[in-house]
Every structure is written in structure tokens, then in C-alpha cells.
Length: 552
Image 1: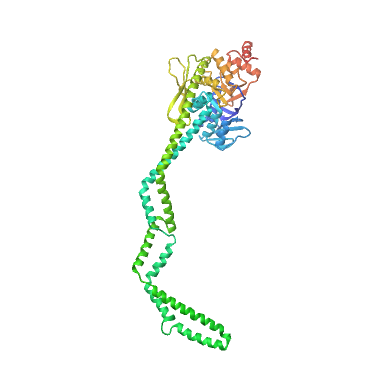
Image 2: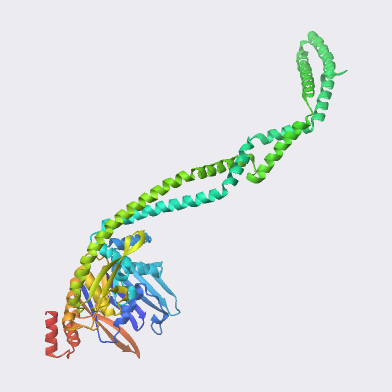
């Protein structure tokens, strides 16, 4: 509930703190004292558009702050958690600030927030009746939730929302797959052409180096053959070859080593050198004989190199990149080939999810129709007590083109306040007082299922008195058993029922008007009720009448 409202430099309010308690709180005072300004400050806190005109003359900013006790308020705690915020010791502090130059800021428990966030949290805590834009009950979504709560259909509504989520997910998957299939289909021929080009090349990621070596040998075949044959002649096969000269040296070393064994190492080294030269000469000769000048083979190798070069320009800088591109293309083509199968399965799932949603929506719609008729009858039974004889209440269920998270229909509360006129949506009811009384009738019936803890009624007493005023007062007292109620009123019948009575008055200091609010003690309250009754506040008769209303 709202336990404290702080207002500073707002309109004619200098600085004001209003403490509110549970049950029924009444705010009274002379006409023009500033009661509507307090409602305006509350409206700002609940999301009203900020205006520099709200700033008190001579001040640089206006501030409105509300302190709420949200202990046990699961819906509000869930909203806070979704915003990444937490209550502090069970309290929530909302703050709006309007600067004289027009800028405005907002805070939630001291953390900067947007005015929209503050307004959303405020609307979960306070229903303000008197200005259409701040009445939660005027919203179709809120009306649907109230009807479902009245019908005890919360679990079924939750199941409908869950099935809608499942259907939405299935539709999203189907749409994404269709888009993907269309994208792939438009590229299908090109994808398959690219994949075929890569696969036909039969690429070995390691063949670059081998092709380079083979091309180099083929390009220099004559040079290699002639050089190898020359090596063969110089080392082994020609006249005065190195192997012949080493043979003579080897023989000499062998004779000397037989005379002096210490030359055995020299002999062994020459022996190895001789055999190495012989082997090298023979190998060179064999290599030279094997070298073949083959222009066709060179052309084939160069053609292969050119083909791989073209593929690198198209698909990647290296052969590994080309192979990886081929794998990716193969996956895309496989996706395309599987698209029809996937689409069929996803279509089946979406149809199944929609059928499940429609089944639950039909059941929920039936429950709503029965509850709507009952609620309409009950509200029509209460309205005459509030001075609205002949008023008609209707709960309209407006079919949706397709089921949504809220089911197969929109819920709209409609009323006709005059006999012979068709019921119209609540948001189109012109009179603030009449609309507030309709809201009061609904709140009286829905008090235990309505999740908004604080109700503020302004203009509810417009144009009523006597027996009707007593009926309105009685209903407000009933509602205050389940909600905190704050009523701005001129009616003594209403004010006398309040648990807490606040008095607003306008004063003047240094030629500047200011609005103040103070709680009334027992004697002051008797005087105020006597004034509201239209008599002399000091008259014994008026005070006796006031005490009678107050029950003291």
C-alpha cells in the first residue's frame, strides 16, 4: 500500500508529506484548497506526461515521491525482478522530478529509471479513478484478468498462454525454415555448381608443393639430364674419371698401411671416398638416363596448377580453405535437400500446437461467458445503491481473428447509465463521477481478486447526496476491508467512514499561496464533518449531527 506521499514545489504546494494508513483514508477541504493538485501529483507519479507548468513559481524543479509497502505483493516483486531491481526492506520508492526548463527524470529505489518504468510499477500498485488515463480497469487486458480471476480461471488462462507460447515458437521455427528454404532455393543451382566444381577437382590439400617440384623438374629437364650425365662422366664413367684416380690413391694407401699400420685410418677414409664417388657417379648416370623431357606432362602439371589457382581466387587462399568451402557448400546443399522434410515436420508441429491452443481457448471462452453473465448481473444489482438506477452492465467477449496469449477473445466491460441507451465501453463513459461509481461497484464485487492494493477515488461524489451518498460511503468502506482506499470528497457521509481523515487547506505566506495537508484529531474531525454538513462548525446541533455520523 501507499504509506507516504511526498510532494515538493509542485503547483502551489511548497513541501508536503502525506502519511496514509490501511483501510479508508479521506481527504477533505474547502473548494479550491488544492485537493485536485494532490491528485495531479499522484497522476504524475503514475506516468502522467510531465510539464514545466507543474513546477512551483520560483522553484527550479518539482518532485513527487511515493513510498509503498510491497511486502507479499508477488506481482510487483515479479515486475521488479524482471527490471533487475529489488525492494529494500519490503519498501518500494518511486520518484518523478520535473525541471523548470522541461526535462524530467525518474527513479526506482534510488536507481535511475524511465518515466514509463515508474508508471508501470505505479499502475500495479495504485488505481486512480477520476481521470481516464490512470484507470487500470479501462484497459482491456486488465478487464480480461479481472474476469478470469472472478471466474477462478487463472490456471486455465495460464495454460492458454503457455500453449500460445508453444504455438508461437512453432510458427517462428516454421517461418525461419521457410525463409531459409527460399533463400537456399534461390541459390540452389549456383550452390550445386560451386560444389561440383570443388568436388570434381579432387583436391589433395598437400599437392601444391608436389606440383611445384614436378613443374620445376619438367621445365629444366634438358639441363638436369645433361648435368647428371656430366657428373657421371667426371665421377665414374669418363676418361680420367675421379673414381679411377681415387682407385690409384687407394692402392697406394693400402700398400703404405701394410708397411705402417698407423696409416690404416688414411686408408679407410680413402676407401670410403672411393666408394662414395663411385656410388655418386652411378646414381648421377642413372638419374640422367631417367630424365625425360615431356612437354605434355609439363603442360598437364601447369594446367593443374592453373586450375587450382582459379579455385583459390574463388573459394579461399589455400587448398585447405577450398576443401573447407566445399564442406560448407555440401552442408547447405544437404539443408536444401532436407528442407522439404523439415518443413513437413514443422508444419505438423505448428498445426498440432494451434489445435491445442484452440481447444484450451474454447474452454476458457465458455468459462468467461458464464462468468461474464454472472458478473454483469451482480454489478447491475449494486449500481442502484450508488445512485445509478436503470444502469446496465455488460461483459462483451470480442472474438479475435486468431487465438492470442489471452485466449480467443478480447474482454470489454460496457455500461449504459441511462435506460434505452446501448452499453458502451467503460473508457467512453464521460462523467468522472459516474465512471468512478461504476468502478466502485466493480471493486466492491472484485475486491478479493483484484491485485491492485491501493485505490484512489476522485470525483466519486460528483452530483450525489443523501441516500446515494450513504450507499457510496458504505461500498467504499466494504472495499477498504481488502484494499487501501484514498478518497477525495466533499461528502460528510464518505469522510465520516474513514479510518484516517486528512484536511487540505490553502494558506498564504509573503503573498504566495501554498497548500498544506494535516491529519485531523477527534475534535478537529467533528468540526470538519460539521462544516461539510453545511452548518456552523461551532453549532452544537451541527457538531451533534457530525458526532452521530462519526459514531462517537
